[in-house]
Length: 199
Length: 220
Image (cartoon, rainbow over all chains, first blue to last red; front, side, top):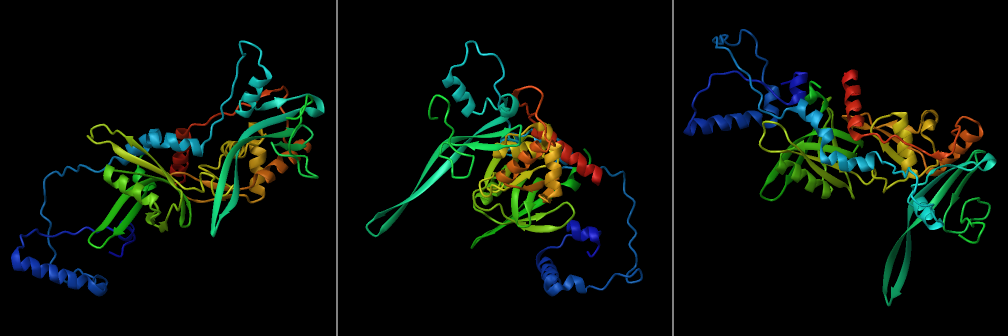
């Protein structure tokens, strides 16, 4: 029981002659086994030396047929990646990116382009010269927390809203983040106004 | 592949009530975690065993995990874990084998924005995970350079895993954007010749898991 494989797999093999033990003899057997197991009794057992007992010659048996009734692990290992559970988890582990490729039937209006942009379907490389850039849209969740006082009770409310932000990386190495809020001082990021008017 | 049992772990769950004591043992095909914090747990077994483990995950229970090498570790998926359940039909068996994958809040990116877990340390997979998670204006061609940068700065760390060679990447969105900007201005990350959409190859989970197993078998 101290062999490394026995400790690892928590298994031992015992050989013996099977006998029917019933009634009081069975109870006595159980009592002795429990008494032996208590207080680390197994570890105190002396090691069995070859001359301790007359060797028992195991009688020759017929052809043994071994059959495994447990789970077929090799097959399961191959099948598991195709399970629906992995398909659901893949959305978190390997996020995919949808892309709209093709020519629209009619030219896109500003509204169409806006919808496609905010949906992240028009991410890509745009512009020319120094203004050439990579544009990447994404949706961001904002949580606003505010407190209300109702007598002695303080109520904490959380308001969640979704907004879109655009990150731009220019060919010069300049990086910008455009959001719905106004830019902070000294920061190139923030609200972007188009040529026609405010965004 | 042969000898799958040598690559699998064992999960034990014990629950003691006033009158009953329950002990459930299921096999672990994939695991990803850091010490006591489990982030991904993929187990399979019969309907009742997998059902009990699913309930225990939602109850934030602690489990005993035995790694293929024999080391043991007490683990928990913590608060906010989600479970995905599925089944696998095996020829010659009446009942479908139940499969469950539990993902922690940390792995789903709801706890910390600076830590990203990846199933294997492949540059394309690491870079795609970061770009999609943070919404970075990056190109797939920059995968090698950015992964090299992350490795040089010690931002890629291996985590405890079964059935994969998982790593955690510790980098914030702002840091990555800054490194990309530097890379572009220094000419290490170049723009494509023509304008247009960026095409990312959408890798399949089956390939990611299979290659992980092949790597493990080769290492063994």
